Image 1: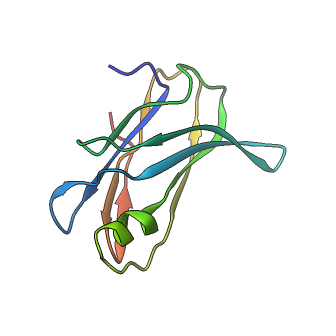
Image 2: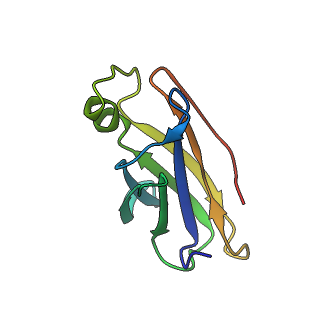
Image 3: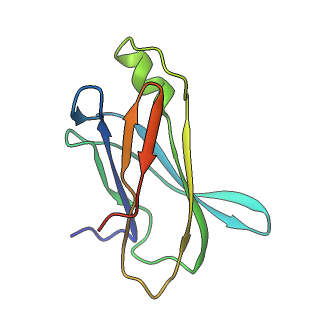
Amino acid sequence: MSDSHVTTHILDTTTGRPAVGVSVVLEALHDETWSRMATGLTDADGRVKVLGPSSLQSGVYRLRFDTGSYFAGISQDTFFPEVSLTFTVDSAQAHYHVPLLLSPFAYSTYRGS
């Protein structure tokens, strides 16, 4: 189990393999301004297990994935140079896992466990 309130992982659905080396930024929205909380890089399993503090205040957050650099690194064109996922956090809930299913021209996400 992670010590982070928010974790993520990325699966490259074109290959069926984890997306390794993707830069991920966790940001918080305060007074209509985004502030950086943490950064991470996906590991060999496509996961960022430690991304920010062990608890967050209730509010609006987002994860920004540098998908353009990932696809450039594997010589693949992409329509989405960045994926930005905005979500709400309830501080009473212990953990948020936000996976990303990625291909060069589409993506999907869900609230994981």
